[in-house]
Image 1 (cartoon, each protein chain N blue to C red):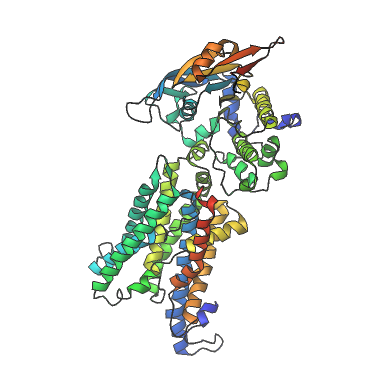
Image 2: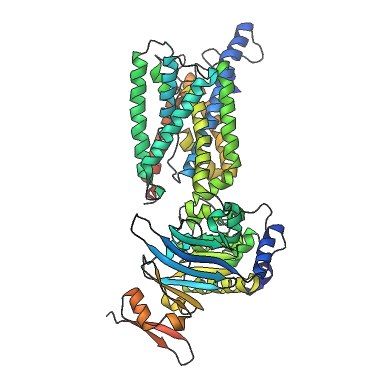
Length: 304
Length: 279
C-alpha cells in the first residue's frame, strides 16, 4: 500500500488530482503488482528447489535457471519472435529455464544423487556464461528496451505495465498450484529418493513435476522484470525458522514472504537515492549474498 | 516400547487397513525372490540367482560381510532397484506392477544410511508414514513416537537429536506406515544395546498382534543368533538359509566373513560368537 504513494513524487492518497491518479494506476500499481508476483514466484521456487535438490543453497538465480530464462527471452525479443502470440516470450523463457535446469541437474548428478558442490558450481558457471552472452546480445542490439541490459540483469521493475501481468499471473498461479498439490511428495523427497519411494512416491516423476512448476514460475518472473537473485534463497530459510519445514506450509509462506520482500526492496531501491533508482535486484543481492556466504561457511549445509 | 501399548498395535479397523487384515489370513508367501540377478555395472553381476520367500509373521535376518549384497537384496525386495534377471513378487504379482501408493501400504523400506540433516521435527517426520493413506489408520504419530521412546522429544528437530534418537524417529515413521512387511537395513546400527533390544521386542510384539513380517540386514552375529531364520550371504549368493543352528556354523561363518571365529554353546541352549584373539 505504502509503495503506491511513495516515489519520486509523493502522492497524497486523500487528495489526488488527475495526473496523480494516472501515475498511480498506470505506473505504480502495475509495478507493485509485478514486484509481488515476482517475489511470490521466486520465494516459492526457492523453497521447492531446496527440497527437490536437497540443498539449502538452491535458488533459481544461483543455479543459473534465471539466466537461462533471461537469455532465451532476450533472444526471442531481439529476433522479434511472435509465433505463439503474446505468450511467446514467457514460453521461450520457460524453455530456457527448463533446459538450463536439466543441464545443471545433469552436471550435479553423480552416482545416484545430487552433489551439492557440483550443482552450485554448474549453476554459477552457467549463470556467468549466460549473463555474458546476454550482455553481448544486448550491447549489439539496437532495441532501446534491451539497451538497458544491466538493469535487466539486476532486475528492473520500472518497465512494468499492465500488458505483461496477465500471463505472468497465469504462469505463477499454475506453478503454485502444482507445488501445493505435490507438497507431501516434496516433504518425502527431502528424506531422500529411497525413503520417498518407500512412502509411495516416484522420486523421478515428482522431482520432474515440481521442476516444471519451478520453471514456470521462474520464467514468468524473469519475463516480468528480469533476474532477481537471493529471494529464493533467503525467504525459505526465514520461513523454516518461523513455521518449520513442512512444505504444505512452507510453500505458501515463502510465496507470501517473497512477495512482501521484493515489494519492499523495490520501494527502498526507488526511494533511497531518489530521484535516481536502484534496481530491486541490487537490494536483494545486498541482503542475500552475505547470507549465502554465511550458509556456505556452515559446514553441515553441504553435508560435510 | 512398553507392553501397555498392545492395544494400539492391533490391526486397525479403518478401510485402508482392511488390506492387511485380509492378506494376513492367507498363508501364501508375501514376498518371493525367484532366481533374482542384479548388476550395478554391465557384465559384473552383483547378485546371483537368489531365491527365497517370506511368509506372514516370519523374521529373516540377512547376515554377511560388507558389500556381500545384503542392502542390494533389500532394495530389490522394496522395488527400489529392478532385477536384471528373475522376478521379485509381492503377493504373487511382480513388485514393479504395483502403484507406488498401493505398494507403500504393503511394505516399507528403511535404508541403512539416513540423511540426518533433514529439517523436520520428530512429529513431522513420523507423520510422513501416513502419506500413503487417504484415511488415517488408527495409530497416530504421537503413539508411534511413544513406541520408540521419543515421547518427550516429539517437538524437537531431528538435527538436535543424537544418532540413536534420529534412527528411532525414522523407525517411528516406518511403524506408522503400517505395512505388513518391513525391510530394514541394519536398523540396529547406532542404537544403544538397550534400544536394540527394545526395537527387536517391539517388532516381535507387532508380529504377535499384526502378523508382521521383517527382513533385516544384520552384521552383529550375536544378534543374528537370536533370530529364528538366517540367510547367510556372500558375494551376492546365498551361502545358507535356516535356523542359526543350521547356518551359523563355524565353517560357514568363517567362509562368509573370512575371519577366525568360533560359535560357543552355553549349557542352557544359548550361543555366542568367539572371535580370534586380537591382543
